[in-house]
Length: 382
Picture (cartoon, rainbow, N blue to C red):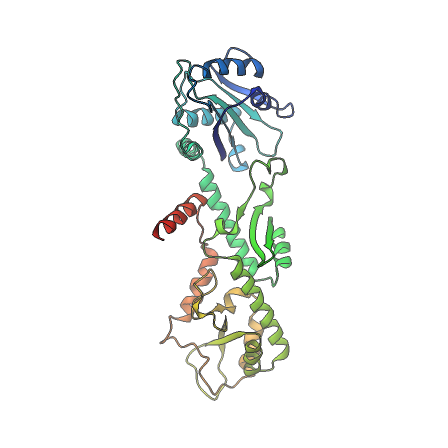
């Protein structure tokens, strides 16, 4: 469930908004309030809040938005129970005033709450420190107690699905336009960002079924690429496209392996070859895979597809490679072995390719809160 909670000083407008929602709002629970109107309830809350003038931001406001995965299973009463139990975990008691409203005007039904942090005796029962994080944890605890998927678990599942489809689509496309089109066919919207220095510099992926224009100002649907995977970078995707273009050009203009390699070198790429079985000089050897790297690119770090000191496996990044490998194997007799990857000097290239393919099936991801934690740890080490 998406959720938010913040402390602030409110006016009667906040309660009027919660009680309206384009005429579709339904108040499903209230506590310690006598009036049935938003204006009357605000006056009651303000009178109690004034019993503790030290607290300026006396109201706690927020929402819980249920995704379809949960929404189809919950009644309004069950939804309200989740909100009340989560609020209880962060300090809301039976002596705190609150109002809960179900909103139905948007794609995803959600519940808004307004709580008076000051109870009827004048005590502030809800601490403001880290309230957003604490409330999110409380909602997750309640969901687990009820056997429901949490927002983090749903997010992990969605990120995994996004990464799997993105990595598979990268194998069959050569540019961002084709990538966007293919992902759309799979039910995903790819949003690109750019700047003057780098051109395309970022990516956000949204499940089409999650897109909700009515709540876009409240929270953005989908996830940034950095939230989906801590390994796959936009720069690596751009490198994959550049390599594919260079390979396509070389394929058109080369009749044998030497010409193919020379053409790639002219484009700034080095070529290394993995053969089936042991390489034998002065005869035809069946090519298993081609590994391509930028000239001078050995200092780069490992990525999702990229392997340091080796490069990109065309077997992994290009699903249309068989004809090229057969053609180069049949038309090439190699006398030199300087461009051959030999298992005894490198990690088994078959294992490397296997690991890369496994990454496609078992994608690496980090939850946003986990990613933030690692960023903080890295800053402390500096």
